[in-house]
Amino acid sequence: MNTCKFIYPAGGLLLTSGLCFAQERDAVATTERPNVIYLLCDDMGYSDIEAYGQQMISTPNLNRLVSQGMTFTQFYASTAVSAPSRASLMTGQHTGHTKIRGNKEIQPEGQEPLDPNVETIGQLFQKNGYVTGCFGKWGMGYPGSGGEANNMGFDVFYGYNCQRKAHSYYPEYLWNNKTKEYQNGRYSQDAIHEHAMQFIEDNKDKAFFGYFTYTIPHAELRQPQDSIVEMYKGKFQEPNPWRSDGDYGTATEPRTQFAAMITRLDTYVGQIIDKLEELGIAEKTLFIFTSDNGPHNEGGADPTFFNTEARLRGLKRALYEGGMRVPYIAYWPGTIAPGSITDLMAAGWDMMPTFVELLGEDSNWRDEAMDGLSILPTLTGKGEQQKHEFLYWEFHEENGRQAVRAGDWKLIRQNIKNGNPMHELYNIAEDPHEDNNVASTYPDKVEELKAIMDREHTPSTLFNFGR
Figure 1 (tube, rainbow, N blue to C red):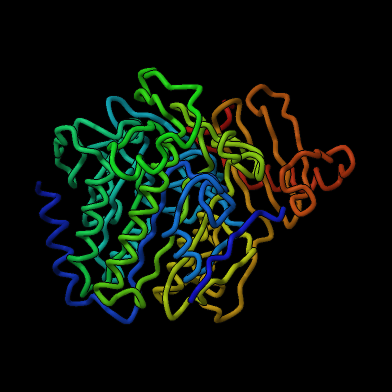
Figure 2: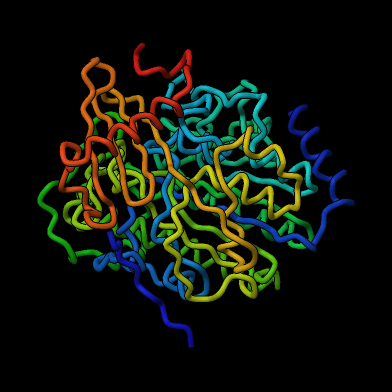
């Protein structure tokens, strides 16, 4: 019997055309290469699940995933907020090179589109004969733009085009490809999950790539009042009920709702695993679970109560470890060693080169087109794993921030937009909570990492720290 190992930080027309294209590819779909499901949840912190140290929220199915798969202890989101993190994931470029480096809103609905000249993960799988589907939150191209999911490599899309709209779990409508589907009071996550499960069922005999972008546990803290919520009723004191502020709905028991949301997501994970096993395709499916950035404290969420920052400092929008280091679990029975743990330092922009190698594509162009490295050797235990000399992030809200991690050293540059930036240097191996700023003790290391920041940030007309 496998035992879960708990991990703690050591330190219409277009639609028809798309569907026809998917049908034409059926002839070349292969069963030799694995299906891939990439489940990117929203605002889940490193310590929000049991396998990473959470003691107040039940996540038995994620424990099961850990016991049967590989757990990463040093995996980083591509940045500390949604749209640029997802754009980096999609393109294999870090946020010094991506077009989308922040949450640039477009009215009345949507965000700045992806660069049409940069290939996405969806397009990579499409051109290799896979049926592709995105289910959940998109946030990388407003309706009618070239950046819509159906235009960026996904045969099927069901969910929120706009990340602002995703602040409501009971939206007026969701997008079914390029058509609005009115919900009539339905809970969005159940609808999205049902479509994702149907996608697996419909394509069980084909090669498929599923990008499951559920918005749990992002605020607002609302959901059906069912048996999952009942698990937590009366378990926590609720001294700070949340009243609707226009962005997020009322939550009279926010701690109860937050815990239940994570257990609900865990239930979805269990249903996905069960479906793969039921269909006999678990051993030919790589299933990855992770988050787009660290935890939030919005809409009544209380990360302090759930002991989040006790392990890693910082929340969403911070470039401290807590804002970016996230859970990452990979499951592929028969290929990934069960119960395995790795401290490989990796990030969201490593996924594109990983999938390039997985598909057997020519990767000679990788170094120029992407910033990531394939982590496939670590996942499979075959071949030599390349390692990053450094990881780089930038963040364009709240006066602007940059961060570099090179080995055990991490430099954070704060307050860029005001013209008087401050630098903080931490040794992550010795000080994983980033409490002891040693910039004045190691000035040469500060200068070394500052040079990386200056080199890796390329000019952008949209995101240039106010310059």
